[in-house]
Image (tube, rainbow, N blue to C red; front, top):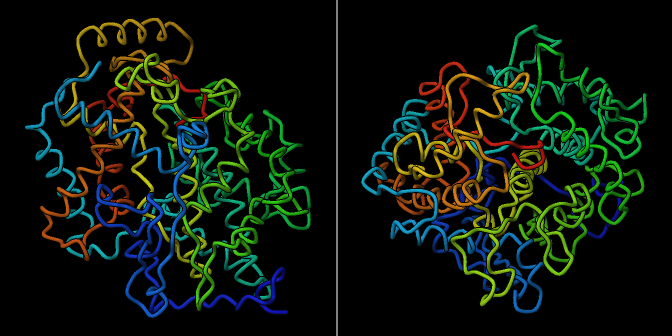
Length: 506
């Protein structure tokens, strides 16, 4: 039997590394030009890169009509950038509810990001990988994913290798909420200590190889519904090395996500009879929108709809609803048209941060191992989280207004009375659904788009050779936001705004 096991009428996948750019350039993962000029959401074609196969034009579906299906529209990838742009336009008029905007700092912010990129990559910009979980696994320069695949028997074909990596990456991303400043993880393999996202990556990898998420003891390197359903809070805490003296933020929220994922994997349409995340590969390759040539070309909206529908039940039911339908990581914002006179959906800004982080991260192994390419990657946005957003505050582009600052500082002092909570390097604190945080996240998406254009201009790169948005996130804004936090708040290394989160958003 060939590489495919479900539809043998399709050609086998051949990964041609000479024609495929796994670092995220044109037509592959994250391949996009200026996102502000994208028309892919209007049902027109999304061009691929200039190889023989890329000359095929892929027609992307139109977004749902919000007048007919407002919940479907707010859950779509199209809505994220479109709704956030409302807030960005108000920012350019300095007419926001909670932040003052100093556009004189915009060029300085871009220059700082450029300095980070040049420091780490000199002028070899094509070597910058797309933002994704893969790089976190390789912390310290150790290629852990390549080493993991090297331990698997040669009879494990590329398709099954990709399934296994999807299994791992999906669980790892769901565990990748902010860990807090006190948590750390000591690798069982190397004995080295890691923190934050990289620590969670190494911890999830070692739990994965130990079979914590598998119901089959003979196949530890897999994730399945039965394995997740037997997972306990205590087992996850042991796997993350959580103790009274090594606390992690949102442990219960992370455990709840994985338990609900175990139930969601029962959807055989997406996850097959073995209830594995990796079986989404077969669903995507068999999907009628996937273009099969020498390499498969999957439309990003196809991947997006599968993630949104297949994982809908894992998110807390308390999320924003429209007509009784949960719309996920989407929140009312005072900068948007009010209802009434507007419709209820018009007041909401969707972000879907974890789903976007999942999409970016899952496209990585599908591209690197199987050579799959994705049409419509320009629809994806920058991630609205506290590293990218913190960059905008720590560079002075955004400043919290005095009344909100007072309210946030009062909340910090109240929270500091609780055991294990930060008491030094005081910053304003808000909950995830607070209007300050919603506005901040929408601004993050909008200004990341603006920064991409400015940074490529400063680097002297044309549209054809410029950095993609995922490359800028990886090499510049996310890293720059973290480094500014380390300098500005060296004890906690926390962002300039602290967010109370249950581990299911950030």
